[in-house]
Length: 245
Length: 296
Ligand SMILES: Nc1ncnc2c1ncn2[C@@H]1O[C@H](COP(=O)(O)OP(=O)(O)O)[C@@H](O)[C@H]1O
Ligand SMILES: [Mg+2]
Image (tube, rainbow over all chains, first blue to last red; front, top):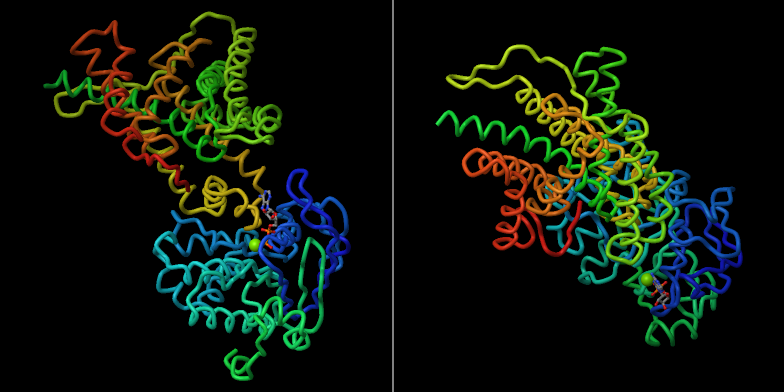
């Protein structure tokens, strides 16, 4: 579904990505992990077109998308949900959601999108007339994911969906992400919550110094000594945690 | 008493004209983060194009208004695409590049004045449209031109409101005004939307020019005074706020009219600024403004 080869890029003259190659298979959740400031968000911005890559190729659904304008990439079915829960605070929840369906000119598709977002996140339906500036952090994250779903994309890029959420909400969000994937979505997910991300994902990449440092099936990674020591605090994943998802 | 009401009504209709220009300035500011100093000339071009449509094709006034709005809107899109975009690409707002845009706006204002001068000459020309009998409301009589201004401006403001609140493109305009990166990620064609914002703002300015033309003359320099008052109106209402632009425009219009009627007509142009200073003393961010910029 998505293949990047030796993607190099950064901000201004500062190079952040030094050749990132990764692959996301259709219908899977792939986790992109790594320490703070290693370039995970930068990579997602390159994929969604917010930053133009300097070198390398990005092929999405059989088509080169590197260097394309972000709105064109959205039209091709690749949507990014940014880090930091960025909604429009002075618009209502429903207006925010409808913005996500901007590329759908067809009324029926917009209504379908709304129904789907409300089905995954019923609280948004209750709050639909409220300004999004009044939502809590968890609700805001739901709004951003729901908004990403509105254009019925083929694949979503999630940037730290569980960041700064209460533990119970973290579980909720991960469960819903799992459900979204089972309903046919392909996902590339950046996470700080490495354990949860690997429990949910099929495959994982660890980025370090702007290159892929480690990769492998999530099952293997979660028990891998290197990953455990640097990112999981040396503990072994519990079976009941997996059950919870 | 009826003298007072007359003055208020005249003030309100002039205020509508300021409000339309201020709406355009605020729209451009909220969408592009720049203050457009050539907007007075857009207003002048609206009047001039309106007069041209009236003279050449003898169109009825509503069609003159609409035609001038469309043509001036397209002129605005052209100016934005060809000239401003290159400067805006390097950044706007409070950066040094934003200052470049301010200077470019002043330059454009001079260019547009000279273009109009070359085509139409310096002479003030009348706009000889007749609106029929004055309108009688109780014991006051109003020239129909004033009623036209108020009605047309109200219709345009309502249309703008519906456009921004109810349409897909209007929602995109608000999104681009709020945050361009997120707007891009919504699949919005941001450069095109910026052109739409500019076009709509210029069409509103043109409408103001056409509406005022029958009670004033049409001339090349008509934009400068209006720009400054519309600017005062926008600041009074809270810069970047659309309801603020309307309220500010009406306040400026009424203050000016009452001042001219009761105090002295020859100081007509300073009342707006006395009001501006007063409002900024009481509420530094303007009536609907917030000091920290929160948009969309
Ligand atoms: N807009 C920006 N301009 C310049 N440098 C940036 C910008 N955003 C992030 N960076 C830098 O790029 C590096 C990678 O950032 P990022 O991709 O956000 O990391 P993370 O992996 O935590 O998401 C960091 O060193 C950060 O300081
Ligand atoms: Mg990040």
